[in-house]
Length: 325
Ligand code: HPA
Ligand code: ZN
Image (cartoon, rainbow, N blue to C red):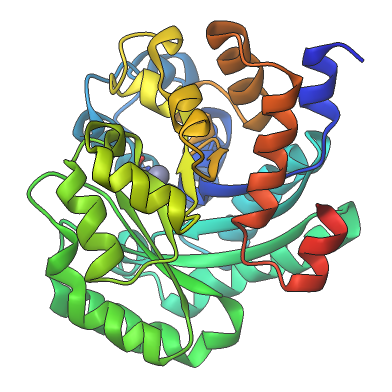
């Protein structure tokens, strides 16, 4: 089997996908029409033209505007179902899906509406061969108090999500800001992850590990600047959920050929490949694998390693992991 076919065909887990980032322009317009929401873009093409980002914040501004069309449980279902069908077609057999409830509750959408719509799609995904779980993300540009309130609203639906994460604007919002709310989530038995070292310094990765006690780091590519941190990540097999096309589109690396995925793998880290916000960054899982392998010269051995890492780094139970690996 040639390398592109192997990359597409191999069973894999996706551990870093924001469901609001899977909202394609066509579905944004469809939902805007269905819900009578006015958009500041004249057409799908006009919206797509706005997808030229210079950094994380320039993307987030458009990403939050896109999510404004989501109002009803069925909207959340439709968004997640569209992603899960793509995942199934790309041989993603497990997906751990981030959602940003504060983006919706701040607009008056009930937590229950968000979680029930997403959770129903995840349940239905079993029928198409995808095991899907939800991870609730706190927005780090908002206060820890706001995160506590969000957790309170979500706990009645505790059985519908397996963990919590931390996303949105990284610089100026270090992990320490959320130490207490993460401690409470830990007491609840939730899995813990956080975005760190996407644009932010290695110090944010250290703090995510040692202050928040996360089990995985989302992105983490800036860790390569700190040899002691690289050693820690390798020794403890802390998974990094790397998102190459996201890093390219948000100018974290000038070209894919300069991406440090190979360096992370060669240093013995449990690095994985993921899509982050596929509707905005020009590709789902297989596009991330295909384009990164083509640009950096990774080979079949790397492909097997990345697929294995994705299951090792997942929150699947031990027997499920055994079957996949
Ligand atoms: N980083 C931070 N916040 C996000 C991202 C990201 O890549 N995608 C969606 N929210
Ligand atoms: Zn992300």
